[in-house]
Image (cartoon, rainbow, N blue to C red; front, side, top):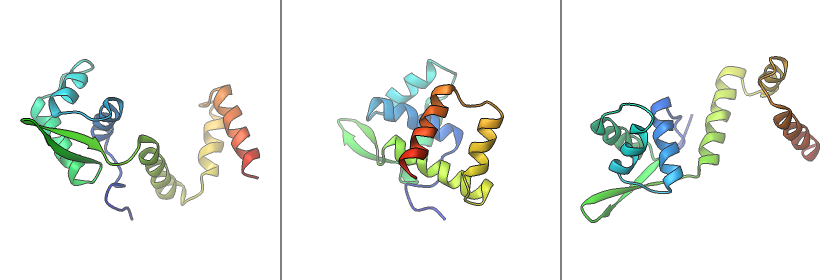
Length: 125
């Protein structure tokens, strides 16, 4: 069960949040223009999605002149950690071991990532 502001993000919501995190804060128009550089998207879709993100507690808005400025309510790192925790809980019944083992076995981790995991293991043991 998740709390407000910790509901898992869809791919589209995460894409919008990545833009807002990079901007630190932004209007619908600013987010729309960044997304438009990568793919075709409707302004109204971005506006709707940002409203949904506000409703989920991921964004808050404040009036800025004639527009609304959207501000993330939680740092990127905390949101991603929450999504990973939810995924591990749902898919691996709360145990991250099989996930890490699978990533190592399938060579999905770079040598740098493996070294970081080894460092974290030593730090936490």
